[in-house]
Image 1 (cartoon, rainbow, N blue to C red):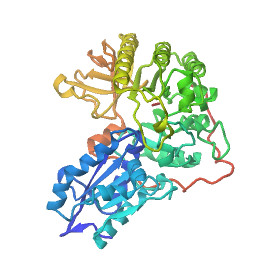
Image 2 (cartoon, rainbow, N blue to C red):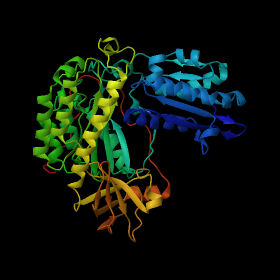
Image 3 (cartoon, helix red, strand yellow):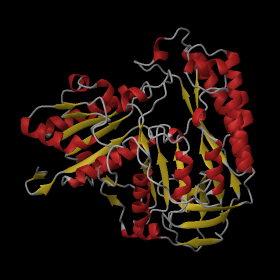
Image 4 (cartoon, rainbow, N blue to C red):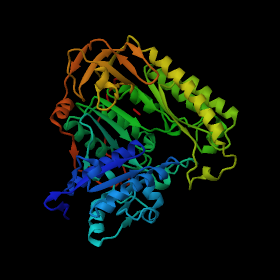
Length: 495
């Protein structure tokens, strides 16, 4: 396969929409492209290949994609050698309709065959016609694919793909398929490989991380995996996203509390505080169970920061249902929340439910929810004024850093901290200890002189301009049987 044009390597640009899983998939797409001889475009607008990695969760996802494809059409008309590829969840959903609506698209690939992209681009060039390939089941576990990481200090690690839940508002199971779990040994091999490259924080990814192990018959596998991550020397922070309340066990809470490098941050999707709406959503937990989990987490980890997802305006939601959501929000005291106005997704059961809520009503409830959340998150953040925090210095977290002279990063509990550097020169990936001096609803400031600055291998890598580029480390799709043995657990101390 050649990616050369007049002796110069062809360039690529990947444009990502959606969740953390899509962000990680884009790292794999970049790894595949570079393995095939492409180089990342210095000027995104002049890339030889543009890859859209799409999301299908929100109603405007379609409009956003086709709008962006429309913007690229003039460039494609001027340069016929340019190629446009569309992948991800929307591609899995729309299949061949994409090239019907946008005939200047060269390649359409789905969530199950990311690894086919370079070959499909080559076929499209050779055959001079669009290539559409959508598989209905996973071709190869994504972690077998090469990965070009975006960060020197933080890495995504997939522990499973797909989802076995049947939430009536969600199209993900139809597009990602049934849950497939990686073997614990494969997950830990990838974690160790990242740490060997200088990464100090990993986030374990899955559509439902705490159902991990169901495929190989170990209900406690996720807690064991967290404890095993505690044995990886050099790994400073472990996070995970997203769990499901129905599968959340006391063992996971214990593993979080007892494993020193597992961060006391928990993303626990609520969706609604109304038992009636939760039932209509097919969320197999109720308000009492949800709040019970929060109570147990706070008992084991009083410093835990808990975040959530909430949908406003699900079909049939009454004013009383919405008030119950507000009441759960007040009791749970979230540190932040990702909030959504319900939108119809064709192909989901909720799309055809009666009693769709008028947009005006949904908007009014949404604004009330935001006001309640801001009041709570601000009050919770104010409690941290005067507290010492450990900040992992990050890239791109502080939009005003250049103007304010601060740098930014995440505390161990996941909160965003903007901090003054004093005479220090921390690099992304380094660790700074500082004291919180100011709180806002969505961030914290630390404007005093930092207490300490620890240089790290990740910071060295950032300074050298080196990010991990790993070959696939998985052994392939998991098989049924006894899982690989985990290292022994130790006593001690996600998204």
